Length: 106
Image (cartoon, rainbow, N blue to C red; front, side, top):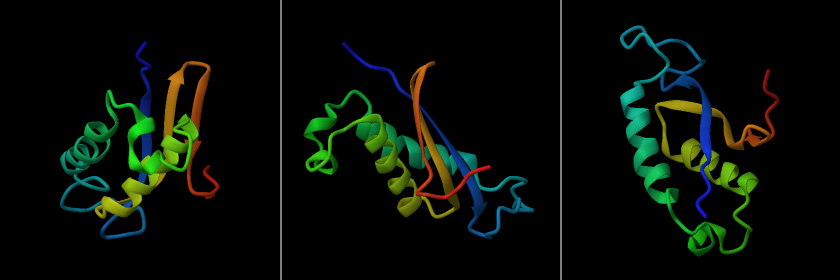
C-alpha cells in the first residue's frame, strides 16, 4: 500500500532578507528556483522510497514528524534564496504535522 503525503511550507525573507519582496522579482524569491530545489532535493529523494533504507533515518523512525524535520533542515541548509519558516505534511485531512524549529508561528 502506498501512502500519499502533501507537503507545504512557508518561506520568508529572500537573500535580500527581512521578508521583504524583492523589487526586481516582485516576490520573496524566484519560485522557479524554489520548485527546482524542492524537486531535486526533496521530491526525488523521498518520493516512492522506503524511508527506512535512507541514511537520515538510520537512527530515527521515519514518522511524519521526523520527515517534517528532515525536510525543514534540508530546505533551511540548502535553499539560500529565502528562509524556510515552516514545513507541514498532511497524510490525511485529519492527520498532519508542522515543524518550525521551535519558532512560534502566527
